[in-house]
Image 1 (cartoon, rainbow, N blue to C red):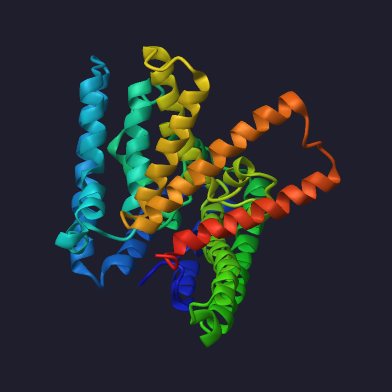
Image 2 (image 1 turned 30 degrees about the vertical axis):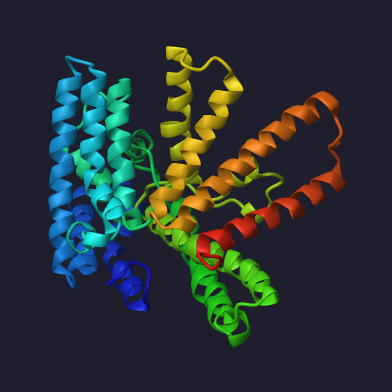
Length: 382
């Protein structure tokens, strides 16, 4: 049973969470019961496909062993070679299904949510290397990895933030607020995904006119697909965040009015925020730090632009090795590098003044560049 895909799923999870709500109002957290709910939900997700179930189980065991071994090693040693080896070993399952699709390895190694679990595991390895994570029990690791509201498609949480919520039992008033927000998020998700997103896809995108490859239909598809992608994914994210709140965990937001972005940098601070922030912190910032520390490149703008290129290329490849995903990543790298150059020139010469009119124009221009990017992402141009 695919998470958040059917009314039956919501009914089952809603019933399972009744004791969690009752405990929340009594200022308690049912650790054992939460583990039981997780098991039931995961069973529903994987019971219909034994290959996925076996792959999921093997992957979790593999990552637990890897992280446990590395954290013990890191307590006494700090070899860069071992660190990079640990990263490589962590992403091997994902590499197998992304890089070797011709062998249909996804049928054997892939499972629902592998990409998002991989973000969590790589994050823990990096945090261990940096010294910000010095102790981690198997129970804590499983609690973070298998948190069922976000397991299939995020949002991507951070371990320290997640652990703080798990270790803190909210007061009755705080839990009441979380429950209220959680239920509202779930209903907003229904509006986004099952009403607006469904109508855009079934009543507009699926029409014969849009399916014909003419210039006008392609332009119309570009805007409709962009809207559909937002409402569908934002709807899912609201479901995940809503159920997280009900369980007393403040999973981070994923979207913040992205189509009102005034520039491409602002867009990536509003769109799929947990993913973009993850790549920013664990790819871009680390790349820039290494370049500056090793002094391999002296010009900070060159470092920044190469970092953007690496970041968005990886983000594109993460979606898949198909040409349109790679071009999508390179397209956004070009946009953000161009905007950075524009912003620096404007700071010097002030040819683009800041006022309500230029702000509105910036939003319109950015919106069109974003929609064209989603047209590339859709694969319709290739």
